[in-house]
View 1 (tube, rainbow, N blue to C red):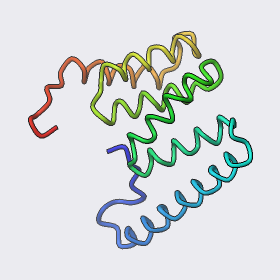
View 2 (view 1 turned 180 degrees about the vertical axis):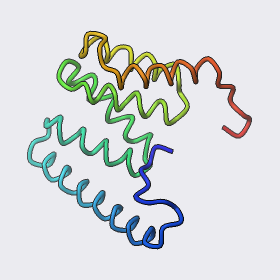
View 3 (view 1 turned 30 degrees about the vertical axis):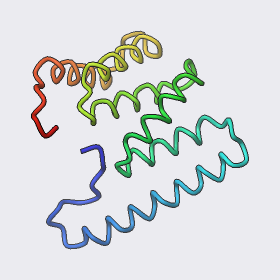
View 4 (view 1 turned 90 degrees about the horizontal axis):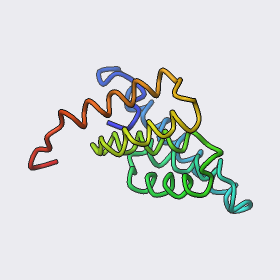
Length: 136
């Protein structure tokens, strides 16, 4: 799942922590949107909106924003490329995810970022072994 779970599923305070976490995401989204209302071309605020949407499980919306940001700020934010790849991975679109990880590695890290290498390997392995079920 692309969503972060604040606690173990059996923890007594899980419901309260999940509600608190959802509240924090909502506040963050409000703040990012306020910044965008004042500075419509603020790529950092737009990236924040997309991250909150992704964290909230709204992957399609987040993916659209990350894709627009990648085009608008292609050489500025490596995180946009990586986050877009993460979305593809979460949506079981493994080949595009692997391509984006590879592109981010080459473009921003000269091929040297252990975390991205691991993500890329995971995407490549999944692309080679994944066979979609009828209900996927």
